[in-house]
Length: 147
Image (cartoon, rainbow, N blue to C red; front, side, top):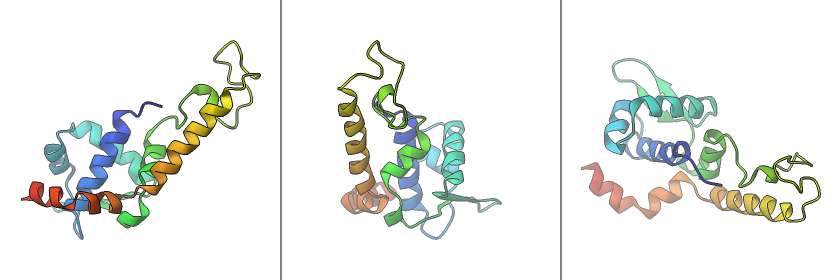
């Protein structure tokens, strides 16, 4: 699976809000400037993250976005699942499908198990990485950039 910019930028967005927000909303325009990500693209990403209950939005002159959950409760796996259209590394790895219809061996391919397991392993890893753990790893860098 090749992660799209949605997952990468979504993770950067959540990290930015965690670092700069604290107990106050972070304007999306500020995130856009700091992260060098288009405001329009961030708006698309925040819409999905809000529907998933990962962030909250606040309107008004001091509005912006805040984390709806604790950084310990937001995993990278959850962010990727919310933002990607597919979470499997190949079309045939969708577990609910018995026949993928993509290749000429559909339905009888023994290698399908490899792709199902690889997808599962990737998300097992991503689910263990939280926003809090990333902040702890790179806390010094964030402090330097925050000035």
